Image 1 (cartoon, rainbow, N blue to C red):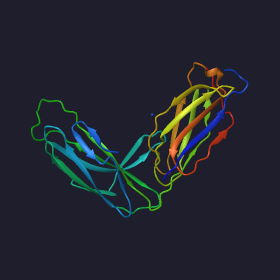
Image 2: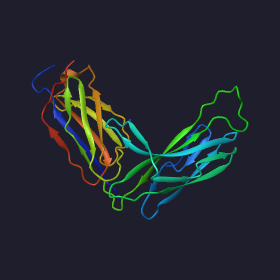
Image 3: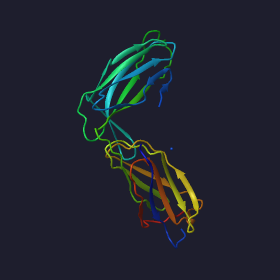
Image 4: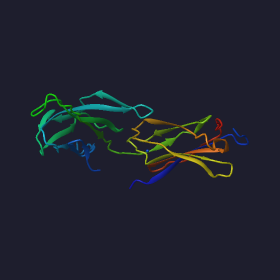
Length: 251
């Protein structure tokens, strides 16, 4: 069982000075499961698409390689590493259709990540020419897991420049991690909380990193003497890191 660990990075600030598994429901389209985890022993899976609406749906399936930028932005590239069938399908009202998905590349020592998209096409039987339609596009993560998964994470020292606070979470393992909690806490000389902020977080893919940035609030900032970043993830062993002051929390 994976153990929860608390990642802590802290920086002293201006001492002595005063200056965010079950199903995806998008409109009338329901897709299960919400992600695929393929392994060397289970290279195939089935995605079930159900039309919960009252009109037929024309759907197109596509696959992309999935990477991330340091601020969590998604980077997609066309790929043939993941195959699927069918690529085009029509699903009637209340009907279900299966899409078979398979790995078409080798499994490496590091997890490979992809996105399978199920996208509604315009028009189709019963479509009203003058109507305005909001088309649905759902992305399903596909993971090609390594034979020996190992989770790990590292947190850089916090840096403070004026009111700007930043730190980096690095994935040092060979599979994805998803922080359960990311927060920044500013404390006064006596160790009492002056402010606390929770930051939104998403996956950090194997070998990747995520840059977190925020600003300390103006109210009470002059009383802050330390800033701590806390990241809670599921990992086997994570140690806190502490660094000396890089700046001061100022108005």
